Length: 417
Image (cartoon, rainbow, N blue to C red):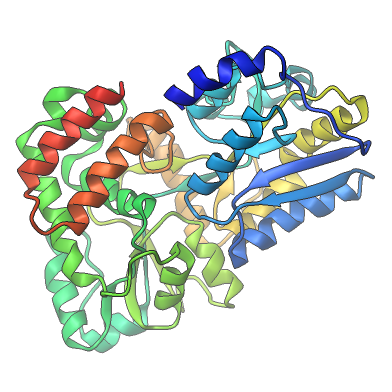
């Protein structure tokens, strides 16, 4: 995004708005293409179309959103971004700085967003105090999904710490199962890595490393220890993991081929879509060592400037609908996440969601609510990409030592800042 801003700046002066020939249409860029995700986005499409507007789907496959962002940048450069795009974290402010996002304050004021949203959420949705994006949900990233039947057959319990993980994983492997389902993609490697870092380092260490980018923390002995533990997990992942999408890894746990997966609670949407019941067919626990902590990821849609009045009305209707109770409940039941809107009824949510809601509130009070580095909540995509490169290269290169990785991490983050 850093270099992209320099490239796009001159174009923005002449192409700051979007035109569309069809009145009342919103083109929506997202990467929700798996089973549970597709069911979730269909809810929003249906609610919008019932209001008489047209939804133009612009889905770009890729669980971490890297492909979608590449396409969005290309569209922005051509002066033709979509009406709404799934953008997260600090990247929202990056797009707003380019002058491409529209002001949603009137919709937010009418919907009372400031009172309905936790401040940690509303702050991310604003640029210079004005709403330019609307949050969809809250995901807890530091989850461990497990198949109880596999553990039963292996004769071991689900590990509570990363120090306990190897013994359980060895027993699972000996019983003929894959201990850890994983997809060999950079964002999935980073998701696993940040769970290890949080579990072994704690919230303050995590915040210093991945929010403040403190060089002493990035180069510390604790970080070396974390990289070593992270690398040790490689032997518990099957040899066919390279390039595997996250939902395929989830299906390995669902089908009993693998015992566990470290993944955000969007994975629960896959279990639900497969007809599985929480607490019976699958277990949801905090990732090892992180029971009192909460790594959050907020899905959101940034709204781009439009100069067609009917399309702008449809865009405002989209923003309004996203925050309404009907969508918040149905969407999050499908997606596996929890509502971002406070005061929602929990009646239809399972105990995994209940646990997530309780943990979100508790961790916010204790200071253990931390933004996900792997999912773009703690830093810009430019620094995130630099961390991705170090983490995934280390994880897949046996010749690199943990000290090598730590040195490279500090250098990469410093260069990207």
